[in-house]
Image (cartoon, rainbow, N blue to C red; front, top):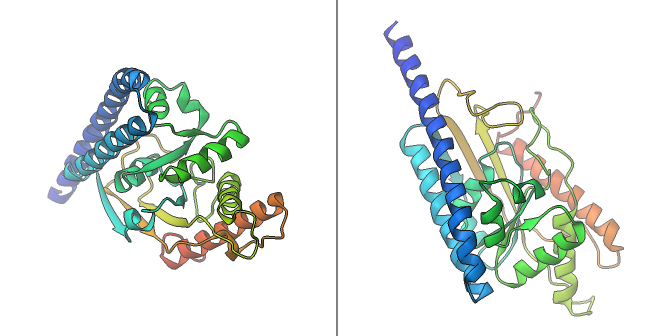
Length: 281
């Protein structure tokens, strides 16, 4: 009876704390849009503006993730050093089980640009942030590739969730879209300078994310609070490159398909190896 009482008390606290955290996030996001975006419009230098905005976003998300841990809502476990792995500008490709994934990755990576849903450009909590930070919309595939390549050349890492939405329930992923692959292949062509015998690939850093018990999925709302603090695990794998699944002679469309499929297989295999997916489920 005593244990049951404390369990209910803990669950009630996490319910209230989760609701207040979402409220705080919405207020801060709206404030950023109302303050940062107007300041960004009058900031005279685009490069320094983006650097300042991405730094503010990184610090805010790092503080927010720390707060969620301090109040007992979540536990975060990180294996590997994402900051070091993507220090020279890389394409960070991750699975997407929860709503919090982008926030956690941005809290770990100071100089990052995200590919985000075009709907966020109309969301009052995000519209100013995504514009001020020069994030890349997924609405136009051509613009996505061009802007993604430009961000890499400027020294930013690109965070991409190629499933396009949160992962389905169970031990499976949505098929990977090919936007990140086209970005990687376009950068390989530009870095190679026309010499096929000297390929240079943009590093691709696969990241595995797992949440136990599941929260903030497509099917679970914020008020579906689990009976214990959820544990978010992040594992940073070694960098890979396009050459592992493509050849310089392949047509771009075929190469992008091969790269997207190959990396999805690579990430899925490691999700099983790390125990984030369960064999036999």
